[in-house]
Image 1 (cartoon, rainbow, N blue to C red):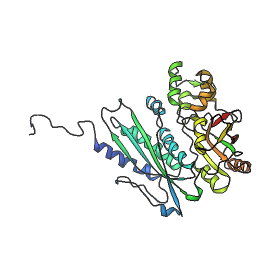
Image 2 (image 1 turned 120 degrees about the vertical axis):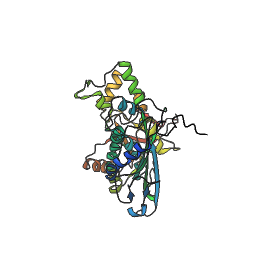
Image 3 (image 1 turned 90 degrees about the vertical axis):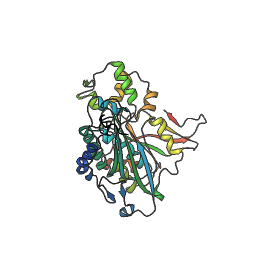
Image 4 (image 1 turned 135 degrees about the vertical axis):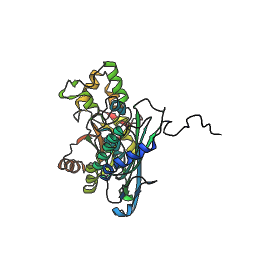
Length: 352
């Protein structure tokens, strides 16, 4: 029986304010509407997001899905109250994984979980997610905001993203990677969203003030460098695939670096990627981490993108055409290696 002398418990008094979450949804609707695209319904508030794949003209489509987060880069953003790029990171980590299979990103959903909802912070994060979606021409058709008291440290939250894309069955990548194919690297914009547990350890060991200017660029702080947004490669890669031939496989260089990600393209084949590490200019942040952080180059190569955010494996007769197209599109590229027969040592990536 209810004890009327005691104050009755409510969901709100237990730390979950549904009205606040509902107000947040209303406030972000204009932001989310900017991500609308053909086939999408970006009206928030339903039980599920809707996308009409027939509206965009695919004949025999395969759906490709991806989910990811931004790792402990988020801790740096939280500790320094900097959320303007973290949503772009979230979108990039998902949609870049779609385009490596030749898929056009169609829609995106986000998951924002926190101990106590701050509408101000959530708005900033979702605005950043929307900006990433706009850049990738990907509709933000839904999401979840979870308020979970006692689950997180004060002011902390976590993010996850989910994206779905489509590709015509006959265009699915990778395909027919063989010895003799050329490896082309497209530059990263910096650290992107991987290796931040190591970065944070360097910060801790050096007692670094992230608000200090970097020694190699007096116009930029370490924090600006560390929180620089992950590059979204969607538009240039989709245009490349539409207008050229010869791309056989693509690898998004994330956690595991070149060492772990390139072999994912030719799984099970008796071939090796041979890469010349002197063929591209390393961003200065990597040179600083390598030297000041006392990190071996082998560790850099298997932890960070090390200056190459996306790699293409292409027919050796098409490499110049592909690099010329990228150049006309305003994108730098480097011929960083080739595919060779495996030497019997089990290595899938050899650095020369």
